[in-house]
Length: 618
Image (cartoon, rainbow, N blue to C red; front, side, top):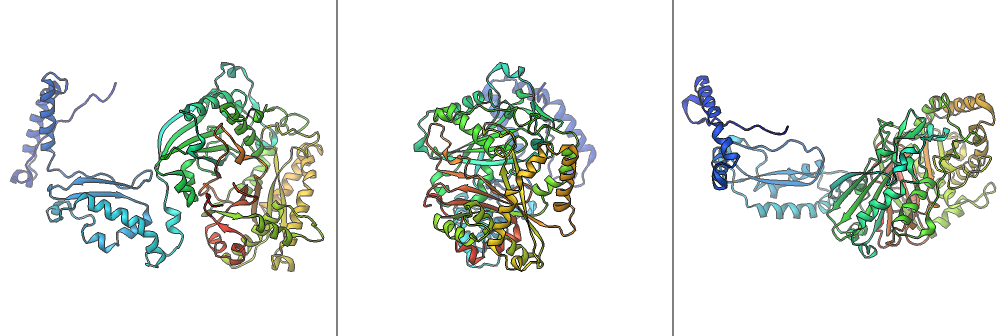
């Protein structure tokens, strides 16, 4: 087996009358002679004529091909900014095959200074007319062009109307250098029974939640941190074995020998430079999977994936994707704390996971019918088609105190940071959505709530799985309060919805019987999915208590915790995460593209929120 073939080259003189007339008989005769001589080629390739003969043979064949035009490609499959320099057919000039972001290429194609020396895609037959271009002049101008493009756009050149387009499209140059699968180190893993999904796992779609931990070089003392990470990950999977498996029939996780995809990548940038002016749109390059996309093949999807990104300076970004099918924030935190402790971090962070409690008969046992009924409701909460943008807004401690004061009312005397921020962001997102659409719509603020301590009997924090539920706060846009988009009323409505989640948990646990479960699912579906008013759903989840900024692999705490660039499938989602310094909060907000454009220019919103500030100077 292998590539055991060679080319017979029939040299035809294109200046001869014979080829001009496309003389079939002469062409066939030349080809026949070439095939007959291929035994000589094979003898040389096998080395029978010594190495010198092989070199001469290669030069001779190269000369035969010298007058043939060599094209390269159309569109690149996976993007990177690449220029390939190649001789023109005449040998007097150089072809530069350039790959750029589409909008950058559109600007370059209209750059008069560039086109004064470069001819765009001329005829191959007239290459003699192309002036000779010194390669270094191309590179110098191209590099200068990239540096000046942002200034050109901001001056209003008319080529790009969106003032944020350059920042959105400038992507980090990240090259994957290896791919492998990490499996549990213990051979006893084959004897472990399948992990049974709970009802809450069953009705959660398969999609990946992202997380990126950034560590500077001066924190990393290990000579080979990548090897330590892989070995400790393999050991951690012995206790967190469902993370290594695959799902079957939406009932359980098995096949633990399938393992975790593990990539290593090289980042052609210094970490400090990236953090000085973080391009959040580039963050997906640090992740092994697309975040928050509806996975088309859930039975084949890995439950966890890792990408370790090494910067030129030696800094590391660990990109993580956890399947929400079996992982909520508390579960992810337990897994990462145990992996970090196994690598060399604080040993008191080790967690002994419980993978049986949540699916037990006394809590949330799996069902056969309900997940199918609940699917439209859950997917309506998670996925909507459209163009979405994610932006990072930072609220410092002073801004949060101001928001808590604004949210205070007779109904809510002491609003929490999460309630105040959720109400403020939802208020302004709703206003932006109304401006974008031109008409009001009812809205629902959906807040993710851990229900471990609301279950009867209570579940411990070591109970693994998707043990959370959504508190749904419906808001009537026809009321005077909603017309004014009153923040205090919105926060009060949210708090009431959270207080009522105990009754939801009671029903989900089956205390009202199977019929009660069915009626509950139908009622929620009618409110959210099948309502003729088509309410907007603004989802919020707080990651403030998960301790992601404390994950220590023996190198100290991360210098920053990032989340994602653009989401794979859209929904209006806000994730609240601790700012790395002080007592501030980062809000990673995903909205419709046109709605986000309005929010980014909302002066009242930006008076308290800072759009994507430098990480180093927070």
